[in-house]
Length: 499
Length: 88
Image (cartoon, rainbow over all chains, first blue to last red; front, side, top):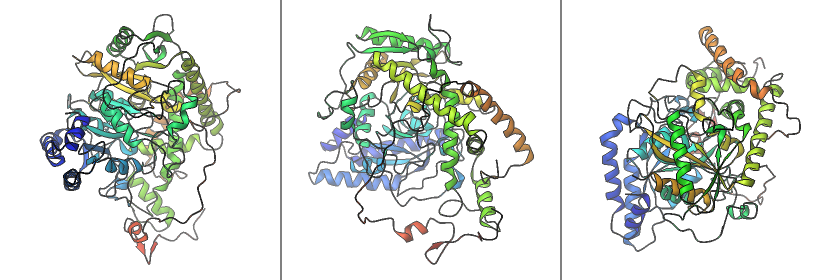
């Protein structure tokens, strides 16, 4: 049952929120021991929330657009009724005194939060193997990773534990696990969704995004969580974007749930550098597997058959994305994670002085990958290396943004794979840092540019595991939710991929 | 670097870390080699302006609730080990 169908049935009194919840809790009880999608299942809190929805329906009140829909929430989003750990020992047991704005909006929309999902520690990773509480497994094949860092959220949706989930995406952490788990994931434009209550990793890149089993469900969730918030000054009003965004139409028109219209007349560019290299466009980035490239080609053919004008386009600077990202994101992380000092919340390991206590706490509380990124960030921000690395990376970021904006003068949307491969075996990439980082090569450019991008399942690889195709757009292209060209292209891919 | 980052490593950990960081910085040689003087460094995707709000008193978090999450609290404050008399 889709999220939209659940909400409709609950609002109409045809299903109780409680019965919907119990169905999902049963599924969690059955398969969660194998999958480990959750750090914390909130059965009691969810039952109370479902009872409130049912009571509201009984009183004849409108219960909200996500009435009774179970939602899984990534464990780096603050929830006042459950621990928020970021899958890190340093925050183990922390109970935030407030809700993230996105969480608060979920509750106001009648959604029922079923649990907090596993992630790579502090969202730093691409396989969820970096969790301090053990890895999540891919519901399609438990010997494989679900991707990351929002691996728990993507696995929860793929396993049917919840029709919807929230993730966060700093370099691909919503889209890549969505691709590896065969579900839909959106990284919104930077500023579309309030980051208030999202534990910061790299503040100029982080965005909260929806994960769902269908494009229409993802749009419904995005509609609920997006919009301006006085508690996040980078969060914008989509209506203000309309003037500068040629693809936005009817920004203030009513939202229409359900399947959007087609792609006739849309100009779609095939991003050669991220498609394994297309004939006549030089080599692509390393690592895009042949089966993933083949599915992407088929997706492009499907869009063309549906009426889009398709053409290859070269954006050379996206080749620099991975390098720039792994300088900028650690730099911001090293600064953001300075707050874990053993004073105000989380772990403390005592020491004779405050400084010694800080070192003891951080050394015991952070995992290996988090320490690596803090060290990398500290290095590239230090005197003598700042100009050579960090400042250059910021210029590369500007170059990527400029070249993508130029491409969007000729194209409404760009298409490429979401991840270079299908889901890999647990442990396959943990020993080789760069091969793990390479998972994000196709998703990073949108984060650096601040642009939206959505991953849609499109067929399977040679191993039978899901492949995701990514549709990228210019700033604001995901507004209005469910109706803009970005959503229409995503829905066209979904229709074409349907068996 | 570890001191700046308030972290401690064993010699073996440092050996491994040094190699790993060198690999990442080696991959970044493409960015390091960039010669794009005409581009302004972009620290932020959307451009930042000043954001203001009316200077009005609003409710804040409850002090006891916040201190309840502290590792050690005393008399309505966070308690920490001595901070004076240390090397900077």
